[in-house]
Length: 142
Image 1 (cartoon, one colour):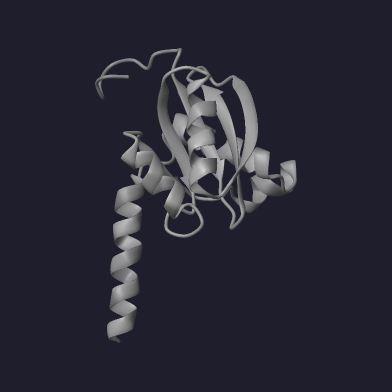
Image 2 (cartoon, rainbow, N blue to C red; image 1 turned 90 degrees about the vertical axis):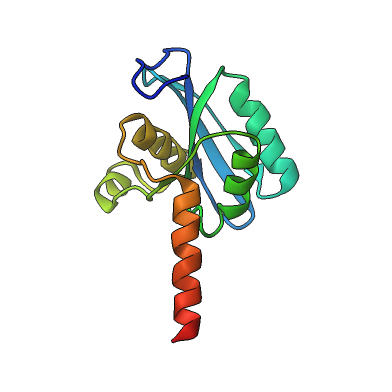
């Protein structure tokens, strides 16, 4: 998608990522809401490269919705932004959704992608990281 006021391209892909210390789960959703696939990758530079290649295999990536951009997802968020991707901070699914579907990293990743698709997750990861860093420094000064 090249402009903010344009209609989304149905070929666009949104990737959701549920982050953890050692491994990240990801799910791909089309701009029309179809689930395209899911994968897991190590939480490492090599894993980030594999995730990006996997995401691009579905088509043009509109955005990555990442849970925990200021914690376990920080490295992934930095790597994706450095590669030119739009990264959005996504809150974990609410308890009602998790209760209905059960705890599952692939489901959480798909929920993250769908939150971006629905416009429920809009804060860019860089803003989230800046806020977290400022809060951390502020607490150190107290």
